[in-house]
Image 1 (cartoon, rainbow, N blue to C red):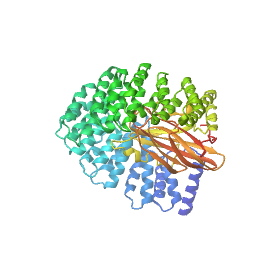
Image 2: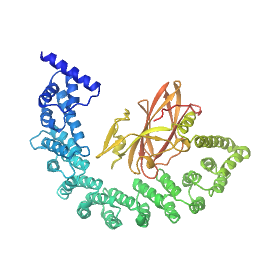
Image 3: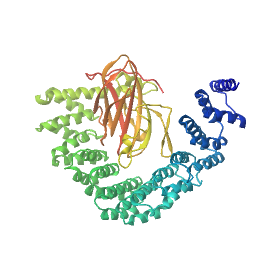
Image 4: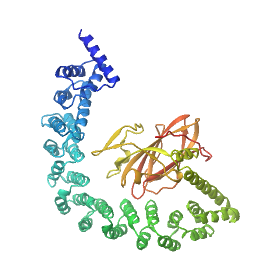
Length: 606
């Protein structure tokens, strides 16, 4: 009879789930039956009990939490999943009473006599359900546990409540230098305004890495008053700590640069930093000055990069290209002749991308000049320009120019005319539902799902962190980035070449990563080439297989990365993981055959 009753209960439960009938909270006897099914040996009954118990609210938690000690893995994991569902539900808006009850139950997992695995589960649950002013002393106590302190720190940071900030702040000066740095990093990310005085005092700590971490924790404020402390920390830093101290000042300058009234201080700081820093810090300062600089900053930028190599040279030239105005274009044209050849090569595409005609005479002169290594790049820069006069110059070189470059000039002219034609078609098809169809005929991928941003991390560890369990993609899934849930959103490419601006449409952020996913339909299986332009770098998966990776700071160049791929008949899945360093964050993609002819594709409307 017991087996008959159980079968009936399972069957009735399945009917209820199938019909999507809202289920009321079960009475105590029914809960006991469901809990018995959860710990029983019938997998079907356990699966149903797991779903039904998730609907029973916080009242079921005291009976579920002891099941986390079960020896049977299936039971333990099923119980944890139910607890997770209940805790997520209790943490929703307007559920303060349930949230407080759930938090109290979760905190029992953090008692001193609990085993490590239960404490770890408790910390994960606490990040979700801790109330804004709830007691976190059970979590804070683990900051003194050598084995668990990192997990506790992360939990407090992700929960992010005022008591969490206070708990972390109270450990400043009491932990070893490495953990003190980690706490300072957390307080900086949490924007701990109440603790600014305590954090600022840590810039005088005896350990140089702690001093640098303290400046980094102050950087979010964008307060120019902290620049003096930052420079003092840099001056006293030893060799191992100096890169961290310089990076901390760069972060402070970036925050100062966000406000119009403090930008003069940021410009001065950027100029000082690019004259003394190297590597990524120098690159970041160059990019920062490019964002807010004026014509008056051109000499400092040129002096800092003229003898550099990529990527610093490329970043610096992109910064020059971002300085607005005809005066800036004319200034760049004037400095060209005095640059060494590598710098000239880097400046030419920047000149071609300027939104005025000031650079055209220089580009024409270089294209017709005697230096063979510069003539083709100058022609390419003319091709990148949207000025009508540039087409005339290219056409003249293709028809009557020097025989040694005539063929290349014709090739660049053809590509430029094709690009302009794509732009014209995109403008003609700007009505709803038309632009992407026209793009599809040209092989341009115009419809994407995007998600992010996710932290890149202090040591770029986010580049290899599978934030979405890539290469698998579930566009209805949600992902935690700290205490913020990220979810996929549709984006349709705008303008020519199918460009997608992630900085404008996903996050106005630096030092992060995001994902873009598209499904394209091909009529038949074929070898193809995926052409990508990405600012900055990317990983690429096609139909679940990684086909490309480049982690590099750079601006967008259309069709820069040419990746051989194999298209299947029907739907093909393309996933990009896109690195954002600073300045722009954008990409564009299209598909051609191996001869460069566009392969028409179809994409479903969102």
